[in-house]
Length: 385
Image (cartoon, rainbow, N blue to C red):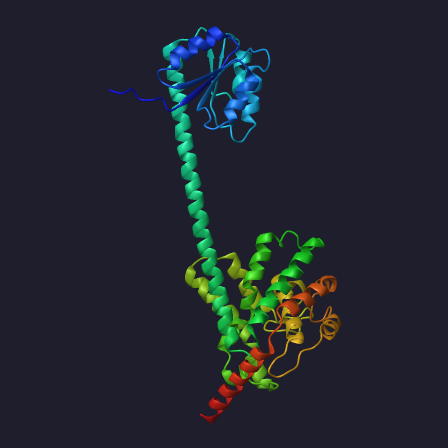
C-alpha cells in the first residue's frame, strides 16, 4: 500500500545542526519539513508560497533570535496567522511570558519529548485549520451579505426612480429635472459640510441618501387632478389650494408605505421630510405647515433651493427659461425670506457648479415640445368629455 505523502509543512529554525537533525527525524514521517539555521532566511521562506503551516524556532540564535523572528512575522498580514512554537532550553517564567506576549502559540522546553512535540504540533495545526475554515466561511458570508445588500439597495433605488418617474409623467416637467435637482442638492450638502456646517448630520451616508431620495420631492403630484396639475396657465386661488396639497399627499404616501413595512428606515425618513417640507419658507410663509427657520428639516431646506432654482432656469409648457444670472438674483433676494441664509451663502460659492449641471443635463427642445403637444392633446380630449 502506497504511503500517504505529507501535505502539511513544518518550518524548523535552529542554528544547531544537531537540533535540526533531531527535530527533522521526529517529524519527517508526518510532515514535510524545511530546516534552516538562520532567522533571516527563515522569514524569507515563511513569506513564499506555499507557506509553512507551522513554525518551530529556537530562541537563542546569533543573527536574528527567535523573538525577533516572531515579531517580524506577526507584524506581516500574510504571515501573522502562522502558529509559532518556541523551542528552547530556557525554563524561566519571564522568557516564557515574553514568548507568549509576542504572539507565540506555544513554548516547549528542551530536552524535547517526541510524543509531546508531535501532539502539540497536531493540536496547533488542528486549531489553525479550524480558524482558516472559519475565516473562509466568514469571507463567504461577508460576500453573500454584500451581494444581498447590493440587491436590496438596487431594488430601493429602482423603486424610488419608478415612483419619481410616475409623478414626472403626469407633470409638465422633464426627466432631467429629477437628475438636476439630485445633483444640486448633493452639491449644496457637500459644500455645507466642507464649510463646517452640520458636520454631524451630513455624513457620507446621509448625503448619499439625500441624493437618492431627492426625486421623491414631488411624488404627491400623482394625487392632484389632471385639470389642475396639467393646466398650462396660472392657477386660481382654489386650484392653488388643491395644488399645495401635493406636499402632504407625498408625505402620506411614503408614510403609509413605511407603516406597511412595519420598520423605520433612514432613507424613508429623509424622503418624507423632502416631500412634506420642501415648500416651507424660512420666514414661515410656506406650506403645508407654515413652519419656519431650523424647524424645517435641513433636507427640505436644501431641496427648496434646488427645486426653485431648477424651476427658474427651465422651460415649461407655460413659461420660457430664465438665465442663470437672473435666477440667482431672484434667489439672493429671497435670502432670509424663502431660503435659509446659510444655504444661500453656500449657493454663492457653488454657482458655477450649478451652471455646469444645468448645461450638462439641459432639457432638449424636442422633448419639451413633444411633452407639450401630449399635454395639450390630453387636455383637449378630457375637456370634450
